[in-house]
Length: 196
Image 1 (cartoon, helix red, strand yellow):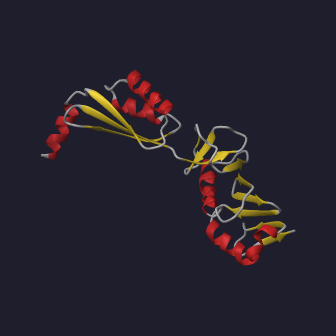
Image 2 (image 1 turned 90 degrees about the horizontal axis):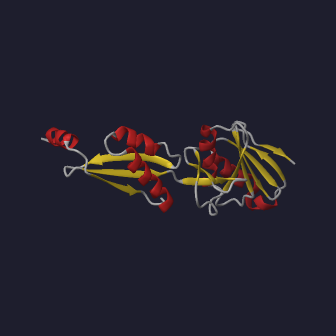
Image 3 (image 1 turned 30 degrees about the vertical axis):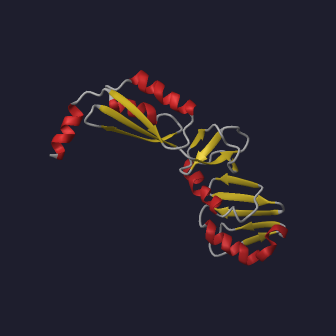
């Protein structure tokens, strides 16, 4: 019975399309989707889906049809995690994908070194899980390492294990994190290098 229902739905022509969005999609972005639906039409659903997914701010698109011949298009946007220093609208999502976004003022800022890859960026974003407890002036993402600067304290975190490394940092410095002057390097296994 289920298969007959699916065959019936697929064989019926599509009369209308309804687009729904996850939160965070601006009117400007909705108009952009509307133009694509109008331009592409509803005849070739693969082309329609590919056209919408090609927008840099779109994370995923799901298409579904019902028995009344209506097409439901669900668009999920990428969610920015941080903004890129020196840019007004460039942001990065949790996968390390860089795209333009309208509102960036409330996002933490990072500096990206040349040649840094999306995979490096995605791993490095784990540092923001601990930054709420650590007053940071600057975060720099480089190939294979994340560096933070706080007043006179620079920490080179490596590219993973940030929570564990932060616990070690708190044990080393105690409540004197803000007073420490120098560099702590956590890139080495079972060792922290201190430079003053």
